[in-house]
Image 1 (cartoon, helix red, strand yellow):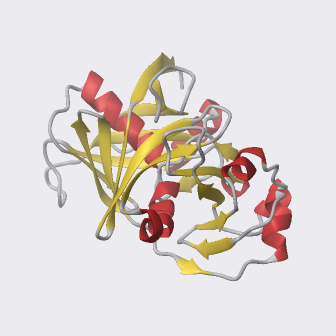
Image 2 (cartoon, rainbow, N blue to C red; image 1 turned 180 degrees about the vertical axis):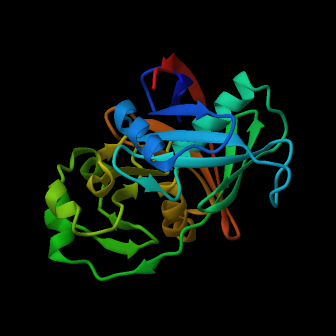
Length: 269
């Protein structure tokens, strides 16, 4: 059986920027091993699989979808850019309107269209400050001025945006610091209209550097909001790069960005 897919550049205003994700819109649940094999074949940071949530399940009905995300090596609990990509596909190809509900391993997530793009409603990450260690600095190749541990990611703050942009991590050392990824961040500089800058390295889930990571901004929101306010513009300074608007609202984080369809294809297997 063949399956259509759409590849989307998320958190981008134009093709070949932001973070690419493949989206498969299925009729119903699929085998986990098959989805993992497909994600490895697609070889993107994440591949998303969604299908309509049956009406006989709690929360099922029109506009409600089950959604799962896979890196080339593992299923993940939360993925922002692939959720944005999926919403983009459902709006453009499935004519979805109003609120789109995604039922995931992280609970029900919501996407809505706004004048500024697509807004995602995610849970904020819980953070615990941790002591700065020599291993942190060694892993990213520059001094660390603050650190905190979230549910799966270690956040490390450095002194300047220039250090974020130029750091050269040792991925072997990075892998020993957090279950999923290490987020390197600083306040923004005069280079762009952004309040914070970050990069994300996730060798433990098969991603050397993630181009733009929506879920990491649920951690970044918790870290930065007490100092710069609950709403700000963020840049992820990878080679592809991308920007998004972040707003902390109670225990939720709104992430707003745009997306562009770049590939339509058919998987023959």
